[in-house]
Structures are given as structure tokens and as C-alpha cells.
Amino acid sequence: QVTLRESGPALVKPTQTLTLTCTFSGFSLSTSGMCVSWIRQPPGKALEWLARIDWDDDKYYSTSLKTRLTISKDTSKNQVVLTMTNMDPVDTATYYCARTSGYGDPGIVAFDIWGQGTMVTVSS
Amino acid sequence: QSVLTQPPSVSGAPGQRVTISCTGSSSNIGAGYDVHWYQQLPGTAPKLLIYGNSNRPSGVPDRFSGSKSGTSASLAITGLQAEDEADYYCQSYDSSLSGSDWVFGGGTKLTVL
Image 1 (cartoon, rainbow over the protein chains, first blue to last red):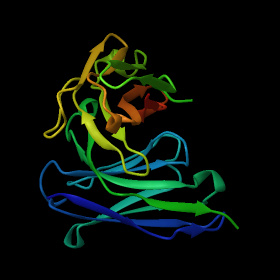
Image 2 (image 1 turned 180 degrees about the vertical axis):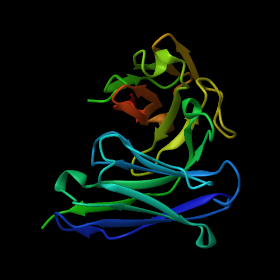
Image 3 (image 1 turned 135 degrees about the vertical axis):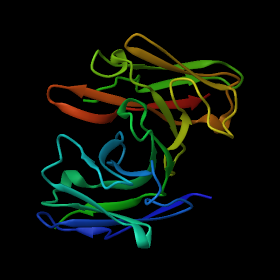
Image 4 (image 1 turned 45 degrees about the horizontal axis):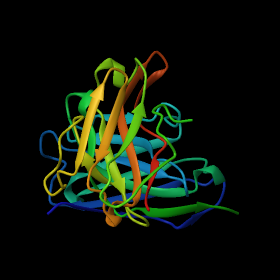
């Protein structure tokens, strides 16, 4: 059974750096073809893809946010970490990690298993 | 402003059929990239509902179906049930001179009357 769980601070101040951890089970990021993405959803708004990391350590970032994002993995711990710098109130959202299918062809990529999400509020 | 356009809301009575559209452009759906659909029940995480334009993951009822044509895609739900009341999102890949991203529609709220 594949599960993912996000963890991190519920509240961050403007200009601070956010660090989120995705801990997963039921698959390994050392297995060929495995990928994990981060996606966020502001309250009452749509989903937004943020970043993706692959089993071979290839990384992809949202065009609009790439200067602020860093994604990394710790295969031994089954964890993926996302950092976002210079947080702003508009970054208030629920942040999800999701197992990502479609390695090797960006046109077929889908997010097949999602974590429950973690709500992050940016406020002073 | 989402790259993929969905109607904000649709509604239908129990037992009826409803469709949700997802309109893109030549840099995403029209380029031949797959469209996927997600169902988000109130207060929960999204769940993959349709992948690869028209395929259902194991466990998804065959009341749900997807199709794609040109620069648009559609999700159809037949035999509407109260438990189908949720937000629905389409997703695809967008690649243009300004960059490449995996993109979502703005979401459609389905109300079962």
C-alpha cells in the first residue's frame, strides 16, 4: 500500500524559508521510474504544481517559482524535502506531495497517489 | 488565471448525466499531451479519477468517463449520486517558449441537487 505524509510548520513569517518533508511508504525513490511531486492549493483556489524529483535525481521546478524552490530526496529515509524561500502571505496554502507517474514522457505525467496535505499559513 | 479553463460550477439531479469541460490550447492539450482528472471531496486531498484521457484507475466506477478532442477534454459522470458532489480538476502538460509546467484547470464544483 502506497502512502505519503507531509510534515512541516503550520505557521511561517513573511520572508522566512519554508521547509516541508514528504515521508512515503510502499515504494522507493531508488527504483527506476519513480518520481515525487509537490503541489499546493490556496484556500478555496485551484491546484498548482510546484516541483518534481525523480529516482535518478533529475529535478523539475515551476517556471514561475523556480528561483525560490529546492527539492531534494533522502532515499534511505524515504523522504522528499521541499524548501521555499522568501515566503509571502500569498503562499498560504495546503501543500501536498504526490507520487508521480509517467517518468520518461512529460506529456503523460499524472499524480496518482496523494498525501493528506499540510496547511501552511504565512503571517507575521 | 489557469492555463486550462473549466466551468466554475455544474449541477445535476441524482441519476442524471453531467459533463465538465476542460479547454486548453496548442501548447498543452492541443499538442497531444494527456489529460488527467482528479476528484476532491470536501476537506480531502485530490484523488486521481481518470488518467491518460480516458482510463480509470482500479476502483473508480465506470460511471466516470473521459474524452479528449483537439484542444479540449471532457469528464462525464452518469447516474449521478450524492457522493459525487466534489470539486473536479483537469491536468495536463504545457510547453511553450516561456517554459514547461504541469498545469491544472481552475476546478469545477459539482453540486448534486
